[in-house]
Length: 265
Image (cartoon, rainbow, N blue to C red):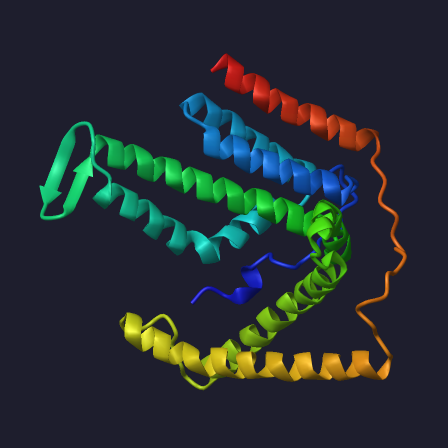
């Protein structure tokens, strides 16, 4: 079992880098544009440019690359499984091997490689945003992006508040699960032994206490908010004022180079 502490969701690493100093709205818009470019990529040159852009972003965070690789590790099996489905069920081009509904073809192999690259780059770029942005700043950026939804009556402020709480408690739940795992291992439980069903049974002592504990924390937080008279219908001012800077303009220009690469290739 991969230690949940390797997950980078909700964790923030301060390095005072160029990426850290960007406005959270710039980062969120950047990841949306990056994913759009990634989905529209049709040439291997596009993937080379996008991969270089991803690793350049990682280097600019001044966070060790190993930290990002550990963040991918818990999701690696899911990414490989998704890629294998492309290999076995996509057909087209030269057929290398076939058995019943399973086919190993030229198109399937190419699609599996593309799927693996896309998922890996998305996870790594998402980690760049998560590790370089404080949860509250990230919540403020999402709230700003969702502001137009107020026209249809969507309560953006309540959604942003729920997001801030979620980001706050995700690392706490992961750390608690990690402590439970170590406690079980000290009692002789081997999570990496046995078949799939046996491993899932061994995970129940981890998930059930964590799941129940999250409800207790939610109830305690709700009681605390009620005691302090928190009202979701009141419009509040913002303590952190977001402002675009020259660094955000430079980041926007860098995204334009991705668009130019699409024209070149």
